[in-house]
Length: 176
Image 1: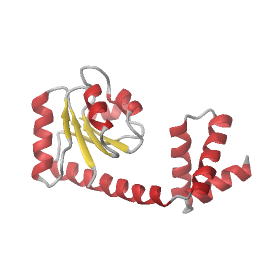
Image 2: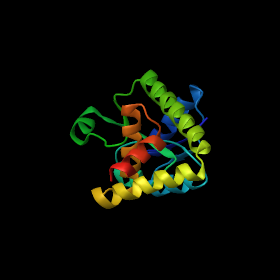
Image 3: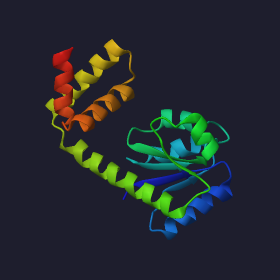
């Protein structure tokens, strides 16, 4: 099971979400009220899910997302208005008012994806890692992408076309 970190500016809100998750069989590794507390909590964990609100005392959810460990995914709980205006990029979202079954189903789906990614990540050979890194480097250089953007681009192309990351990386290298 993945580690879940709950981050809301009001401690009582964070504890309510933690209690709701725990009643539904989801273990919570930490409850935080600031983004910096959440980052400290994540330091001791390999991967997991950050369940959070839109704004904390010290940063917005986008800033936290940008500083999170790559093994973590974010689930934003926000009003429909905020979700419609901002359209969280690369972040899963559940609209408020909160529907418990929707929250639990989304976390379970995210945990399944993290588990699958961990299994895939362990199976990569040094050669595969080198090829993927080379493809990401080319994408970063030629398309002015960040490493995360290049990685997500390779992932998306792999999924869209039904190829492995390795095959997609080899195609990118051969095309460039």
